[in-house]
Amino acid sequence: MQHAKVEICGVNTATLKLLTSEQKEELLRKIAQGDAAARQEFIEGNLRLVLSVIQRFIGRGEMVDDLFQVGCIGLIKAVDNFDMNYQVKFSTYAVPMIVGELRRHMRDSGSVRVSRSLRDTAYKALAAKEKLTGELSREPRVEEIAKELDLRKEDVVLALDSILEPISLFEPIYCDNGDAVFVMDQVADPVNTDENWMEELAIRDSISSLSAREKKILALRFFEGRTQVEVAKEVGISQAQVSRLEKGAIEQIKKNLS
Image (cartoon, rainbow, N blue to C red):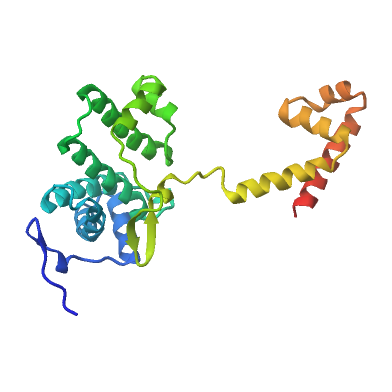
């Protein structure tokens, strides 16, 4: 079936490039080396990503051309800040930046107004977040953003909350060859996962099987940072016995976890 021609900002969307995964990787490597032509080609090859993201903002009183231009700004920021060492797909990294740029535009042009000072603080916090994300290769904590701006944590939270709009965690914001990126993919907790929770339970269960003296030795050694000599005096045995019991306890935990 032939798709109807749709022009946005003078661009025929039916003729937009679609890069393969291999082409994207090759262009990203060239961009990292400062290749301006590769950067331009990569941006043009990801305009479909912008089109996909702006769909959820259409119908809010904004011109599609304006949304597309703003989305392109977010795409360019993503290209310029992306690092292949992040070990994530470019689309996973870029979508939140494009969405963020569109939300900032919608807030500035919307009917609901936030005080100028509060909005400025929020934008500074978002800029600091992008900067720290590049430096840390992870999402920065609120405390880190506050420290970067020399503000109180509460002020940063208040500013960011004032410009947020509620959305469903299960709302798809991009679909790459059938692999949807949902809002919750961007806010998932990398620490308290089911796998980590199960591992913690297994470790606790393994430790519970140790004797009271073995538990005390491990607690003194690894939680309080005591030396084997100090532990020997505390427990009332020789340093050699502490070493033997410590090694045996660790081996037992490893065996239980295997």
